[in-house]
Image (cartoon, rainbow over all chains, first blue to last red; front, side, top):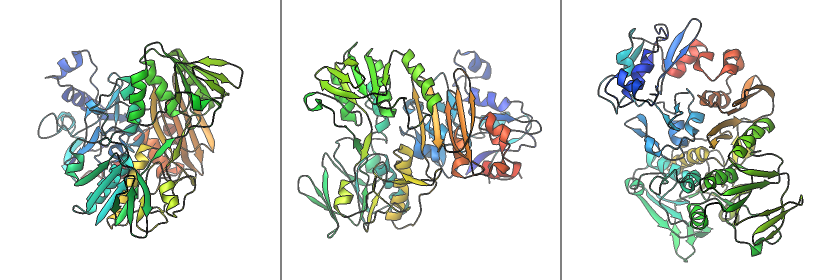
Length: 144
Length: 409
């Protein structure tokens, strides 16, 4: 299955992936409208910055699937290998935040629920927005 | 193969999933004394609060049983496991044969003996029916007395505050949430909940109950219109003990989830688990634990041996918008970082992270959870980063590449 991978040697910590992710998942037609809509768009990819290394992390769609197994409501499920969240069923208990070994479940403070990477399967076909937007090709979408 | 599952919550659903991974065709029968499609027990407080609808309280889609080829027998209670002819007996006398049996009977509310309780109308807080009963009786501004300041009692308090109820919570312990919080975090949470108008009377218990009041052992009398007893739960173990299976505080299983009776498995809140963080046996009444035990059991029942290991106590819960995530055990060297609205405690022992409490800021807590479960040696991580916040940056480049998915090509 194709997943998103990050080459930390190439990541510049420009945070553009976070912007493209937030905009793509906001439902707004472009980034300006997304950030002016009133509700703060939440990126599902997070850049970690260090003194000499940076990298972005997002859901690994991993084998353990502790988030899905632990979800108390059934909001998290697996569709064709992709871990997806039915936000209408999430109550913001954050059991998945407790469970995810990569820290990839993002808390939507305003919405009192979680958000997570679904590889842009709900947004469009082809490469996820973070991959498309990375100016340095540090984020790739490929089979490994 | 003919599988029978007693119970219809997370452990049962996990069992169905585990069986169907291996055996797409075997007959599965789910028997439950409740009459509902599988619903999420932790959601009952959200339902009462009005945050979850009748439709969304269900744990799986309406076609879940159909899709998984599961027959359901609802509203019937299993009264006996007959190990000689491998069948279970229902309360209407009907006998249901099994090749492999799952006991996922969960727990029941514990109601301690109290003077006058037999003459008082009270509620427990455990099932969809229990919150439906509360919903039908609650009226705005009612005086509600909740006995028990644990997870269930406080979730009940949060839900009932949506009705402008005047809530008093009484607990024998001198602090709230003693099962998951230390004293300092407990005090912070107590203050937060008190700001919402909930009154606590701690360190005492009900001495004498009358129809609308409770006289406490400390001399205080609390009047109430509604009484909720939420002091704890006890595992439903009788079916297995009556059949000769080993039961301690809960049903005893090996790490394939098999009980001491052949072809009889158990999972969830009715069982004893092994806590890997303290290396001790205890009941881990947690939904993720129930599901994963069920899944492991299901695979074993269907013939693929696998083992449930690395279980630890862990909780994610919030009250009135203040969130807590905790995991592991708390015997060891402590690191504490506290602000006005947040609390962080990390506990180290044997050069590993053994437990943590995060309150207020719970972001990315699972990175800490994985450190406990995987027993990652502190020598492998940057300790300052670990203490600062959960982050992948604290691991070595090699460990991080392994975790995040291979070397870039």
